Image 1 (cartoon, helix red, strand yellow):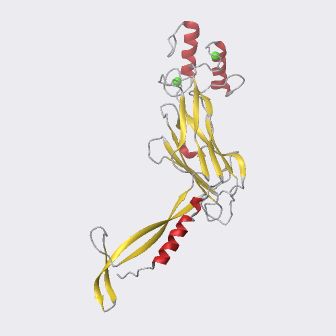
Image 2: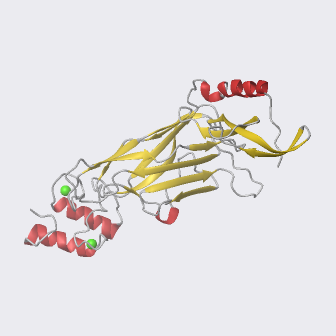
Length: 307
Ligand SMILES: [Ca+2]
Ligand SMILES: [Ca+2]
């Protein structure tokens, strides 16, 4: 392999270019992705965490975001069946939206979405520049009785830098740096004035005949241009079968449960919390739990969290 040394003047020019790379300039945010601070009832159903986005400059047609619950004993994301709620979000009509448990631990999830995924000729546009829209509603699972004496708060963090792409497939906020790599070479085989074979040498132990300045481009997303802010989920403690959330258990909760089980009046009136009356501990709220609650209230029967 033959190498052609470049002249010092070119070296200086390349060095000057590297100083002018875009990262040398201050940037304004082009997009801000916010994990909302959220408060939910512990063990409640239909709990969601909203991730919002403001994209000031570009339309967005591709999203990749990694989120992590720092207290998985309190808060987990539930994408079982991949059927998480998209209605009313900016991804409502997108063709491909998936949540992937990248580490298969149920704690860190990658959400990936592409507006126009299938080559069906019917183009699905992304969303235009806007401010404060809901990007994704993340379904939450929280335990009804958290086994902890710490605060009932889990920080929700961005595991990695958010990736957004425009309808043309360009990543938002990418900057490139020119990497200068200087190599030193010595000729090991001459043909008159021409070198036939060059050998790379370490200048600390060998003399060299010439040097080559090699450059490469390194791209990354500037986190001051695409900004991801962390959030939190706070749990409000609840009491088993306190369906109307008045801190007590009485006949009104029995009525709520009867309505829920036999008249499908889910969440009717003050009955906010029908999903959390699994007194038998079998994972379901059903007739057996109703019987146990009635026995406890009116016949003095045992109950899981009774004083
Ligand atoms: Ca109650
Ligand atoms: Ca049960």
